[in-house]
Length: 446
Image 1 (cartoon, rainbow, N blue to C red):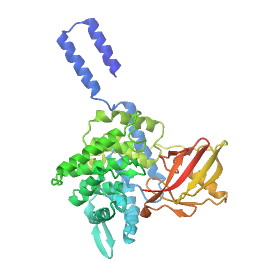
Image 2 (image 1 turned 120 degrees about the horizontal axis):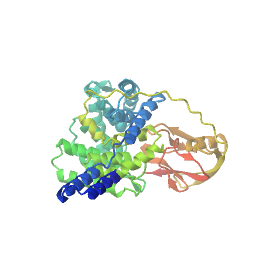
Image 3 (image 1 turned 180 degrees about the horizontal axis):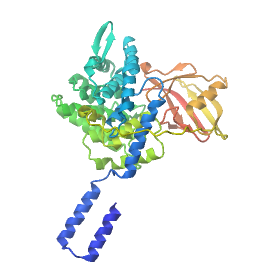
Image 4 (image 1 turned 30 degrees about the horizontal axis):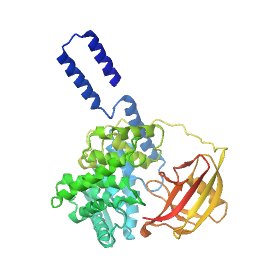
C-alpha cells in the first residue's frame, strides 16, 4: 500500500501543479492514513477470518465428550455467525457441560476454570445467568453464587499455602467471569491476584506463564473499569503496568509473544489494557501467518486467536448485545480427506523420568507424521513395560500417569514433555513426529 502512495507522490512532484503547502498536507495525510492501518482489513485477511470461523464451526460437528465453552465464546465474539449452529452448541453446553460441572461440585472438586468459561460462554449469548443453578447438599443456588464461593475457596487456599486450589490462570478466569457479569469482585479476591503479579507467581516450571499474565491482565483491567477497586487503585495500576511489561518483554523477533499458542491471549490482553492496535501489528501478522500454514488446527487455539485478530478480547463480552447479528456464515460441504499412513518410519527414543529422578529409556519406530500420542500407543503395544494413562481437557488429551506414576493437579505435579530437550508447545495429539528424536516425559512439580 505504501508503494501506491509513493507512486502518487512522485507523480505529484512531476506535475508540480499544486503548491508546496498542499504537497505537505497530502504527504502528511497519506502517511497518517498508512500508519493508521497496521492491521490490514484487506480481502485476504477477511477470507482468513471467515476460514477460521468455519474451522471452529466444523469442530463442533465432530466434537466428542464435554463441549468446549471457549469455542462458543469465540464464535459469539466474532463478526460472522451461523446462529442455528451456535444455538445448538449453547444447548449442549447447558446440558453436557452443566452436568459435568454439577458432578464436580457434588464431589467437592475445584471447578473454577470450567465454571468461569461456562459463565463467559452464556454471557456471550446474552443468556439470563440468574436462571442457571446448581444443587449441592440439596441446596440450589445460581451459577454466579457458586462461582463466588469457588473464588472464596481459592482465595483462602492462597492465604494458607500461597497458591490457589487450581492455578492463577483459572483464578484469573474466575475474576474475569464475575466482573464481566456485573458482579462486584471482592477486594480480597482481586488483591490476591494483584499480589501474585507483584511477586511474579505466574510460572510454569521456571518460565513465565504468558497465558496466565494475559488472563490476569484482562481480569484486572475489568476490575479497574468497573471502578469498584478504589482502595488499592495505585497497586492495581502498578500490577497492570507490570503485566503489560511482561507481555511486551516476551515478544519475539518473529512477532509471537511467548510462543505461537500464547500470542492470541497476549494480544487480547494488550488490546483490553488499552494498547494501540499498532503495538500489536507484528503479533497479529504472526498469527495470520501461522493460521495460513495450519499451525492452529486445535479448536482451542483457534478460539483464542480469532477474537484477537478481530481486535477484540474476552472483555468484549461485558458489553455484548445480541441484536441484529449477522447470520450469513454457511458451511460448504467438504469432501472427506483420507490420509494414508506413511511408509517411512522414524526411530523415537522415549525417556521416562520419575519424580524420584529415576529414568528408563524405550525405543519405538513410528510412521513419519505420527503424533506423540500415537507413538506412545505403539510403544505401549510392544509390551516392554511401558504404560500410560491420559485424561481429557479443553486442549485435548494429556498424560495423567506413566508407568503407574500419577501426575495430578491436586499434587501440583504434571508430566512435562520435551523433544530433544525442547519443551513441547503442543499437546500429545497435536505434536507431529517428522524426524528421529528423543521424547522425554518428566514428572515435574509446579
